[in-house]
Length: 153
Image (tube, rainbow, N blue to C red; front, side):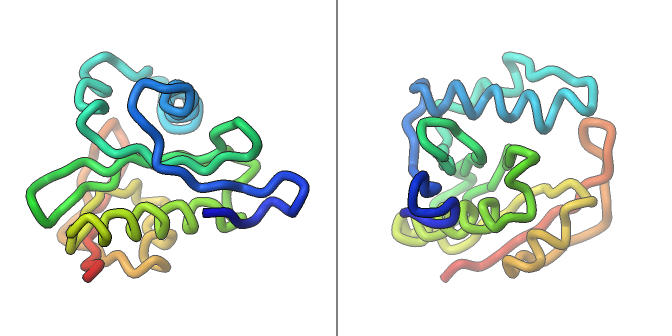
């Protein structure tokens, strides 16, 4: 899927394999955007299940500018995790397009719902994509989060 970014260097959305160049760039993006601001580096136990998850990336040229992972929960549910977007591309539509791209893949794979734990500060981003808050706020990695869910079928 292609979109945004102009015709000279369009943004391309891909389903990427574990362990390849896109995974390594995604790992670095997660570290820089999600963990470094909290002073909490990614640890081996944070990435131990990555090989069993599906990775989706937005690319500008060969560079990962956004990524997310879908973790299988059961036959019909996946958990969206580790969503990260380069700061210069935040609020540009890249993140929402990437979420929809991953949802389309999940839907085609027989998944009927996606759950996630969103940082409270980005709840509106997910609400705009039709995710609904479930339950009360909770603290994870030292900051407030909310559980959210979306039926995709």
